[in-house]
Structures are given as C-alpha cells and as structure tokens.
Amino acid sequence: MKALHTVALTAHNVTVMHDEFKAVNNVSLSLHAGEWVSLVGPNGAGKSSLLKALAGLAPAEGQVSLLGKAWAEWNRRERAQTLAWMGQAEAGQDDLTVYDVAMLGRLPHQSWLSTPSAKDHAVVEVALKTVQAWDWRTRSLGQLSGGERQRVLLARALAVQAQVYLMDEPLAGVDVPHQADWLEWVRCLTETGAAVVSVLHELNLALQADRVWVMSEGRWVHSGLPNDQDTHQALSAVFQNRLQWREWQDEGVTRWVALPK
Image 1 (tube, rainbow, N blue to C red):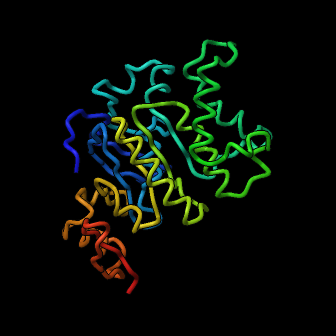
Image 2: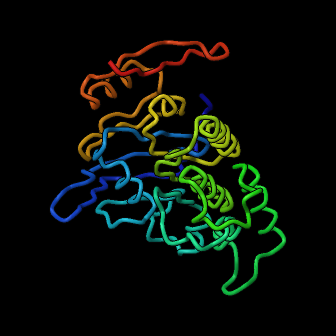
C-alpha cells in the first residue's frame, strides 16, 4: 500500500438524524490523499447517510473538515471544485443529453452565465471516453439503461477534476466488465493524489480497496486493511456470520474472496 500523509477529509463525532432515528451515530474518521476506501455494511447500516453528511448534503451534528479546513469555512464554488459527489438513482436530468450531463461537472470551474471553454469541452470529452460513453453523447440520459446512466454520472464526477470523490453505489446496475474498468479508473484517480470513498454492495470489489470501513446500525464498527483477519471478522459479524473466506493469488498478490455460507 502506498505511503499516505496528507489528510483529505476528516469527520469528528458526526451524527445524522432521520426524525427520531439515528441513521449515523457519533462517527469519527479520516481519509488520506491518494487513498481509496470502500464503505460496506448491511442494508440500513447508515452508509449512504454518512456519505451524504461527508459531502455536506445532509444535516449533521459534529464536524467535517476538507483538506484541513472546516466545512463551513469553504465557499460553495471552491468546495464544489474540490469535492465531487456521485449519488445513487439520481433523478431530474433525464431530458439532458449525455454530453450536457457530463458538462455539469465543469460548472464549479465556470463563471456565472459563461459558456463552456475549450478546456471544459476537452475535459468532458476525456471523461466520456474514459467511461466509454462518448458514442452516446447526443442521446438523452432517459434513454439509457441503469448501468449506462451510472457510467455517465461517473463521467460527470470525473469532469470535476476534484481532489476528493464520494461515490454512493457507483456500480449499481453496471455489468461485470465495466465494474473491472471502474476499478482501473479509481486507481488512476488515486495515483494522481485524489481520495475516493465508495459505498459498495459488491463486497469482493470492496476488498480491493486500500482500506475498508465497516458500518452496522448507524455505528462505526471497523477500519482496516482488506487482507487483515480483523477486517474479515468485522465483516462476518455485521453480515450475521454468513460469510466464508477464501484466499487467492492475483499476479503474485494475495487477496481474499468472501463467499456466502
């Protein structure tokens, strides 16, 4: 694992309430530049609520800091340039073309009411080609399948050229070959120094991250390396001990696979 020094994002005693229910209960964490962390846990664990709190999209108690600066100290434009969000099942953009959806990622870099620059167009083209969606650029988002939509939303996030990426179920509906592509894209982001947190239900993909964060019932359960036995035990516990573990070699690297019992 690469040496990580710069803290990209921190949270201290973050709590998120849904009416009288604590969706996230007093969570503290830190994320480093150049690091990919997978956030996993059973349904209802509070993963999405936590990620939204980290992105400033959900009211929360506690404190979140981005690049060492408290969330409230950022102006909206600088914050949007620094942190990119990719949510699950996002609505309201179905009439836009694929190209225009990806161009939304460039809004934080544009002046009010200005037209996209040559750089904006170049960045969007690269982002769409990266996710293999360039050939659909004139189609509307509403014409796409769920997995295709996810790839376009990823292109929008990539177009931000942010330092921190928060992705909530980015692989929902995405076929297996493009899941493998997504892993490569994430690795490319971290190699540039960006930090990534992804909520994943695809547990064996999550185990390829630099670190694994485990949640259950709104609580922070564990943070550890994907090959550590403590991480496997924490995952087994939150999934009601219904997992079994198998070791395998990937180009000389030892990895673990979680299988249902």
